[in-house]
Amino acid sequence: MNAISDILFWISTGLLVPVIVLLIILFLRSIILIGGFFGQYLSIRKTEKLLRTDMAGLTTENVNELAGKLPEKSNSLVVKYMREILHAADSPAHVQRLLADFEIAADKDLSLPKILTKMGPILGLMGTLIPMGPALVGLSTGDIGSMAYNMQVAFATTVVGLFSSAIGFITQQIKQRWYLQDLTNLEFVTELLNEKRSAK
Image (tube, rainbow, N blue to C red; front, side, top):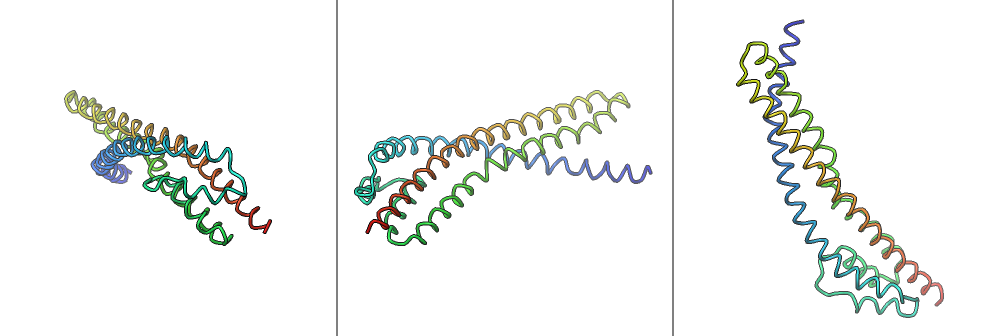
């Protein structure tokens, strides 16, 4: 039984370095995500104002004019797919394919926040529990320095894991709301194109 316990202890202790490295990577990715999120927010503010104005007065008669009103230079996902849908207006199959592609692209953009949300607490908890073993050993042998170091590692990994998770959670919630609004606009334009096609 002692041999099995020692093996488990060695395995868990050996996982500490990979866990810390992964937490550092998650932390760096969360910082990069904040920068990208801010840039996306600025882009969405510009396109949302334009789309809100145009969508209010959009009908089957003027739906094709929307393509000319869209900004030429925009890295917004909805503008790109809106333009492609308007160009493929005569092909319902292509329009449906573009809607599905938009959902896939949106889900791909949400993958990093989802990973941060789930993996941050998992790695943070692992980084907390792994040093607790050596800390308890240090406490039992009277090595206060070793115990203090391991407790410091435990607390630091928890904080980093929770920080990464919080960034992932906040950006995921906001981006999901953005993409839901974008999908609603794309589906509205698609329905108008279908009505116009049926009226011919």
